[in-house]
Length: 116
Image 1 (cartoon, helix red, strand yellow):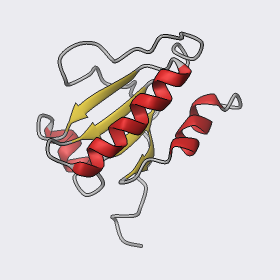
Image 2: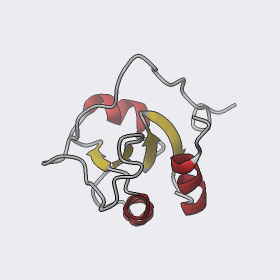
Image 3: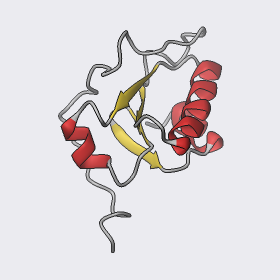
């Protein structure tokens, strides 16, 4: 299988990193899920897929009251080396959820699934 499609194992021992963009994670109005999850959007400037992904992340997180953060691969060498072929990448609680295209229903389900 091509390394492009191979998922990398999540590093469970590492908590999500603080945001690379100025300020704290974006927080939504309703706190009902906010202490349970953090969504991270890894992107780069000028990427139209990244812009599309951000719209979905913003909408779902706002609806569910889940905080999210954006990270720029041009500002973080480790993120660049790990994800440059896959951006935009969405992490949920530090684990890769998806890349390239973000499906609103799938992200919503991942954030509301109580079995995790």
